[in-house]
Structure formats: structure tokens, C-alpha cells
Image 1 (cartoon, rainbow, N blue to C red):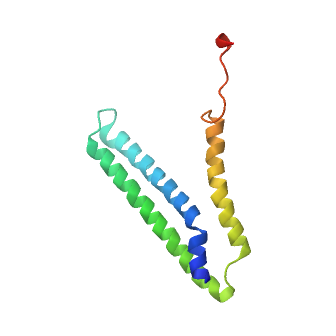
Image 2 (tube, rainbow, N blue to C red):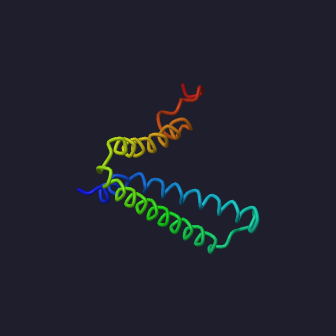
Image 3 (cartoon, rainbow, N blue to C red):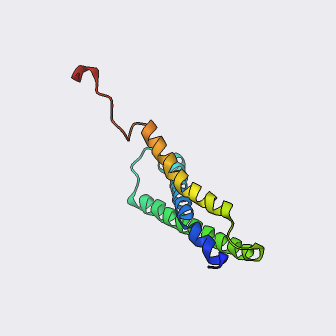
Length: 123
């Protein structure tokens, strides 16, 4: 398989995860701006949620398409140098495994995963 097709396939999962993180960041910034400068603690209209979700979908799709296009162009340039590089495969697998592990580690540390301690009054 040509490297121009291998790199987008290799980085498909990491690109999707980064696109999701970009969407979360855009919604967080957008909600913060709307809260601080527009609506405050007053009730928000339903259109604000629609705008935030439209921004999330747009940011996610734009980030995903951009990352896949970059991996395609990088793979195309790697064809001259000999194709797929082993260290790039290791990096893609490490990112694909590492990002979910970081999320799981965070959720475990905050107490959402695992057994919860039993309060002293129930012992």
C-alpha cells in the first residue's frame, strides 16, 4: 500500500480523538464567553445551546479533515523517502493508546472509576 494511503489510515484514530478534544475546547471557550460577556447567570435561551453544538460540530469536522489531509500530504512526501516509517507507526499506536489511558487515569483519580470507600458509619 502506498504511504499516501497508509498514513491517513494509521492516524485515523488519533485524528478523531484530537478532533473530539478540539470540539470540547471550542465549546468550553464558547460557553465561557457567553457566560461572562453575554448571558451571565440569567437563563440562557435554547438558541445558545444550538450555536454551541454547531460550533462543536464545525470545529470537530474541520480539525478532523485538516489532520487527515495533513497525514495524506505527509504520506505522499514520504513515498519519495521510502514509505512508511516504523517510528511513525509506534507514535500513532502510542497516541491511540495513551490518550484513552490518560482519560482513564484522570477519571480514576477523581473517583469516578473503581470502588468507593465505605463511610465509617456504615461499617
